Length: 484
Image (cartoon, rainbow, N blue to C red):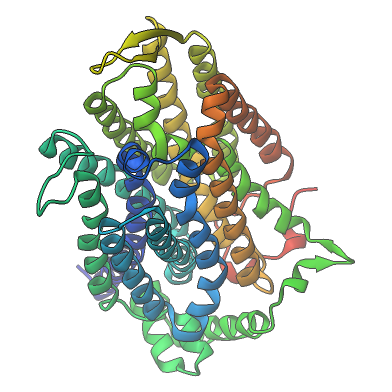
């Protein structure tokens, strides 16, 4: 093997490692947002919550996500990407322990917001860091690893929730140290939070941050060893490009997103991608699916098993997305994903329109309304939900975060990414907090709304979303590739 080949292999291994560590923030992102799924019912019973308050409590972490997304970029620019990751890990750790030891709903809300700030920070820091250290021809696949880590985190939350519930005999029953199983669901996040903090110590700073601090020699080392740029002239040109765009970024303000008193078209495209990703209702599946399937007659242990299966399919679909993103681009898969999601969600709405209810006596002799789906509609609903998750996981899941990390011109990139991410989390909060009330009104209405949003996203992609495949971050500009 030649010296050049060994050097290239070393660069591949180095960039793979730093990207995997950065993407581990996505694992905590997914775990933190999905762990609430197994605890919704017990929390509602333990604190006697209404549907409105239950939805608000589940969704309050997303308020923290908005704060973290909007401030995470500026924090990373001030203290560095690595230190920002350590801060996020500390927030995850505090939220895990605090949420597991709560005394009432209000301190649960507080600790969930703390964890949400960590999630929001990770949602901005990791994609930006990965984009900054990845070669352009690998950026799609490496950037998509962040979403893969998210869905693995969601999967592990489903597995741990099912494990704790089965060990205790129910999520609301005591497990260890006199603490209910649902409390251990939260506390278990402390382990990956500690691992994330330790791993973050092993990766270098972003070359963009190093150049911004005048540490050109260190930046050259990272660009050579991690990004794989060879040759003194190439390194000098790259650092000059970075310095030029950093000077633009340093002066970025919200007003820079406006031209002639109007928001720039590319910013609207980013906001649209961020909003549509949540308006299709994907996080309803991950936050509420256990209680959703129980509401139509599936037992708790079976509902948790369904969640494990669904999250497993999400992982496989995300891997497919990673394999295709640098071959076929971003725009066409997004359009295909929108069509597939609309089909799956539409069939779910049809299936839930067949639900039947009856009055049955509970163990205390009291009459309760029990809802169920007659055959074959129960199977159709389950299959349709998983069709929706597969199309989302292979397209909108990884591609939205990837495009937000790479689509904006550098002169507005930092502030535009923060705004789009904040819209994503705000939309997530709106959809997630309203779902319990929408479900009480009509599951047909809820999933009909999500199906309509998926259909609208198809037209949005075909008309306005640009293709960013193969472009260098420093070469993005709004006039060169924005669609009319």
